[in-house]
Length: 79
Image (cartoon, rainbow, N blue to C red; front, side, top):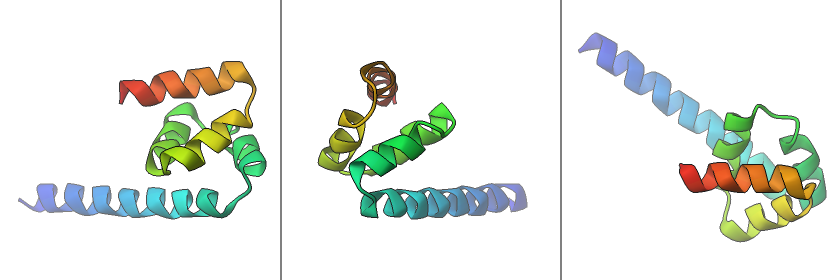
């Protein structure tokens, strides 16, 4: 029971951090967001992109080199 609560609390904390990161990207210009997202670890980048509205994610992906955007899109589709 205590392990489950600790795990649940940890997951909620992680979700809150991811949502905070996504909020930062929501406020950025797509070109700037794209440049930063490309530097993130792939799984984190995909988690952040998946929390954005489709239009926001599209503008960011559009600002990336095609090969990198395609990689993120394929990962987004597999979630």
